Image 1 (cartoon, rainbow, N blue to C red):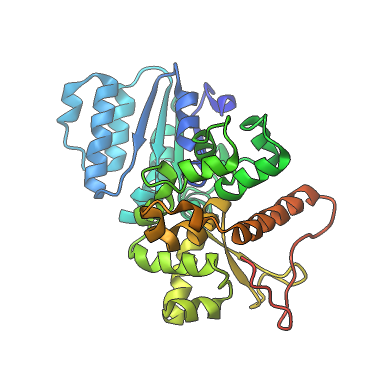
Image 2: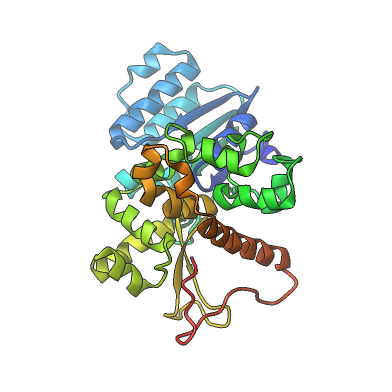
Length: 361
């Protein structure tokens, strides 16, 4: 990101990735000791978001009069701010997809803001979002009005398994595999663990214990992002428990095929669910399986969500069934092996057919 900072003309950077992967912290670190304005969009109305941004701009300019100006359009607000700004400034717009949700014209509006107001100014504009599908479609997609405007982009992804050694240097390979099986490579989740304790202790105290941050994290993320969260929770639980084919998900949840199709599409857009095809078949094949996108979601919906009653009573040992845990970790080990072999073969993946349908997660 620093390579774009300080260029003579404006810089337009796009940063996106799953929640808790460290996007906001990266922006804050980049902006440290630099003149900047950071704005976090919320699920308010467009008018309220504009008012909140105006307040941030007024504080940045230390100008009470700016707060009282009745800007009616985003373009007028940005023009007013730039006219009052001296020297280089970073403008970071976090959770940009929330603005698109309330007004589909927002990408067109910001195309105009960039082309007519910011492009030739000494400005770095950062647009950031957690809804990966929306960022890829409405900001980066070739049909988006913003297509071709960015001067840089970065999809921030979780750490790979091999990088867990930095978090758990004193643990064995097997123990790091166990950590990875319920945390994936999510930086925030890894940082919550006690590196002096073993995986089982951390699992019991930092994931399965009532009141711990990760105890309700998955449910909160689904609730924040989606309407009718209970329906989505049912689908995610069905998939985590091995109902990975479209028909099986319909049967398990009792939802209509059209409803399941829409729910799965929304979950794929958020990168909570991923669609997997046999390695020998094209992606247009109907022989697809659905899987949870990362190991934390997969673990939570298999072990936490269906066992909330026992966990509320503190019956943690009953939830951690040894055989089920071994099976869960074995799938994660398979995933890591594929990662290690990437690049060694033209294609690498799993295969299944009608006569050999695996109910693996």
